Amino acid sequence: MMIDYPYYSSVQELAAASNLIVEVTVGDAHPDLLRPAVETAVTDPARNPQAGLVPSESQAGEADTPITVHATRVDAVHRGTTTVGATIEVKQMGGVLNGVRYSTDEAQLETGKSYLLFLETYPNSPASILGGDVGMFVRDRTGRSTSLGQPELTVDAAILASLG
Image 1 (cartoon, helix red, strand yellow):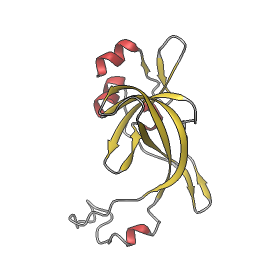
Image 2 (cartoon, rainbow, N blue to C red):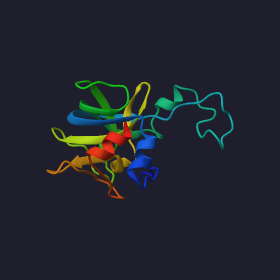
Image 3 (cartoon, helix red, strand yellow):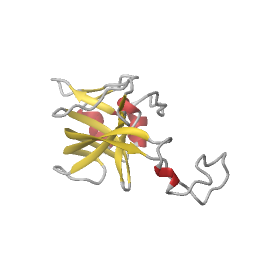
Image 4 (tube, rainbow, N blue to C red):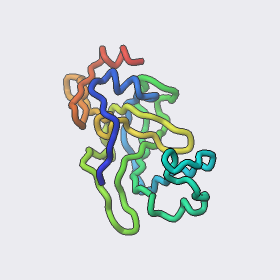
């Protein structure tokens, strides 16, 4: 799968787009499907590719995107409205659909590992990591965190404190 994510050239740009910045430990994951929202108020096909569909037709599957949903435990909150110990569902593109495994080139969250995540949250849907794996950081022994995507961005305690 090829995914075209917005580009973030700095931690400040990434933070400006995030409504939740948290450190998490990843728990269990399960496959799911991301279904396009059926917008009935906008009927212009140029502005709404699903124009004319009714919700029952949107269940059928050609536009479904396989995702993997990870349950994550919040270890620290740097921005946003959640608490330490809360569970947040985080989705990543790729997974299984009709017996076929779909994958991307981006790094995947791993069960049991800890990450600093720059997220966008939505009502009734798992959070998304901004910029794909650019919004996914791992910490080294010095306390500095480095993104797993490109461009490679770094965050230290001083930068994190300035983002809240």
